[in-house]
Length: 212
Image (cartoon, rainbow, N blue to C red; front, side, top):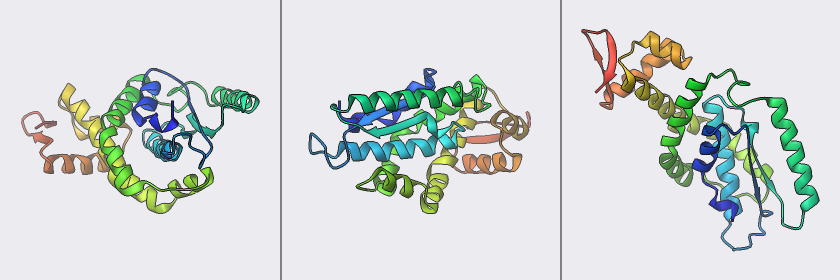
């Protein structure tokens, strides 16, 4: 299967199912067998997914992509041994990052729900073409990309988690802050945005936020 077929949702599903890491092996850049540049798409997707993982508190090193051909069996084995060792050093998913199971589930659900929107953002605002893996890494580590990730994705992730919690029951700013591990001032900002968008409202009788 072409590495360009590996979707962001596949990676998030693997983590949702408890996998400690995800490895993607693609053709060498500029050597696409199908002349579709699918491997370039894969490198964009992986770098974006690493940024997304950072937003939800997961170690980005749990995801790895390498250029490896079918004739490089020895190199493939070396890469997998190295990656397996790295994952053992990092530790179990969530636990190593200090995220309990419920909180991790909430974050992954919010991220997965945003996948169609993130695909659009990547295509319209973030996609780049580079002849090297280092070029993709450098681009996605730039200040401009960090700003766009915060502006276009991180805030929506937080609001998505808040809405999931409000669907369970009404909650105060303090309760949301404690569950999400965010400063109360940040939660208040998200609630103001949610109220303007008609997603939530403050119930004066219960002194709690509820879904609109």
